[in-house]
Amino acid sequence: MLIEIHILQNHAPSNLNRDDTGSPKDCIFGGVRRSRISSQCLKRSARRSSLFTGAFSEGELAMRTRKLPDQVKKILLSRGIAEEYANIAAIKATGFGTKEGKERPKELNTAQTMFLTEKDVVAVADAMTEAIKECKIPADFEKIAAKDLQAHASLKGWRPITPDIALFGRMTTSNAFRDVEASMQVAHAISTNKMDHEFDYFTAVDDLQKKDEEDESAGADMIGDVEFNSACYYKYFSLDFKALVDNLAGPAPEQDGEDQKKYNDTRAAAREVARNTMTDMLRAIIYTTPSGKQNSFAAHQLPDAILVEVRLEPIPVSYANAFLRPASPRGEKDLMDDSLDKLKDHVSRITRKFSLKPIARYWFSASDYQMPDTTACDTMDELTEALKQLVDKGD
Image 1: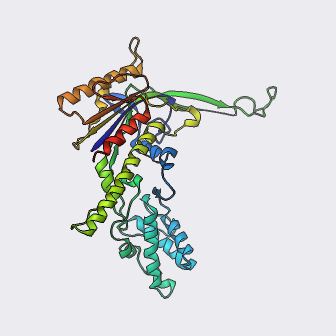
Image 2 (image 1 turned 90 degrees about the vertical axis):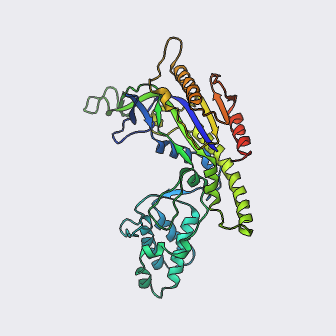
Image 3 (image 1 turned 180 degrees about the horizontal axis):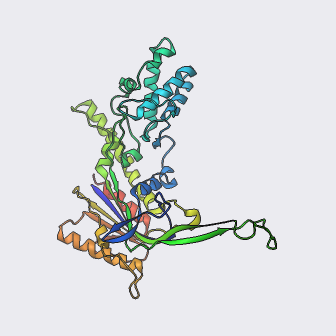
């Protein structure tokens, strides 16, 4: 079951996602420059939002970090392992960021940022603990290569993963951690309209400076400028619900029997977690705005329209091409009106031409705009409840 989310969201002047020069990110689409918000930015904003994290207890979500060595050291010390051994273990853990196991004693962090669960960190600490027990002196432990520690038996096999890893996947070059194929794909958000950069020229004045001061400090204490724009964004997310359940449940046993019964129970529990994760992430996507320059612009606008389509076929379809010709205000219609019209026409045409009618199509509009051949949801609660009922019928 493929659940696709299409969002139209207009933002007031803002700089939500900056490039290396501090300018709002952009791109060329349809031969026209557009404003852009990267998929990484959208994913992190939703994943780290209080709406999503608040739905889980401590330890139920993963950490994206290079500080594995520090985490491992803390666990070893809590187990009563001598500090000399724990310090060596921390250095060994720096090699877990690469397949070659190259240690980084000066940096004391892993070579790459990794998406790790608490169980992953504990598994590394277990491997270190067992290796330490086999050593007579710290020098013996120091001789063991990080590459060999990564191949330790306690790190082999499948370990349960967290909902955020199940959603967005994980790829590492370390043999100690299994790669996970993402069940959710996120597109870069692009503006439906042509982008025009603007600049905010600002000054800062010393609060304690007197108006009648006659010295060199009179006038602005600082001047500068910041780039910004205003844009209506099209956002697209695609969630493979079955893949989400598969990621959470883990591999099925090779043979039927008692193991299969246990796996069926595991899968049923994973399905319930996936169901809740789906709606928690949907809310996070809808209610969360990237944090870039928000103290300066406070561009906290909610979406104007949300289209959710559910397909049985694994055929994801983005409607970005609805805006090959940029949307623009025309007559009595504003930018959002034109964007909505373009989306409606494109959805209708693609559905008919490619015979891709979904099994369900839900529509939410803050302005009561009508989308043909959809189930209208008057509130967000109605939308999330409809999705829950649908996935309850099977993935």
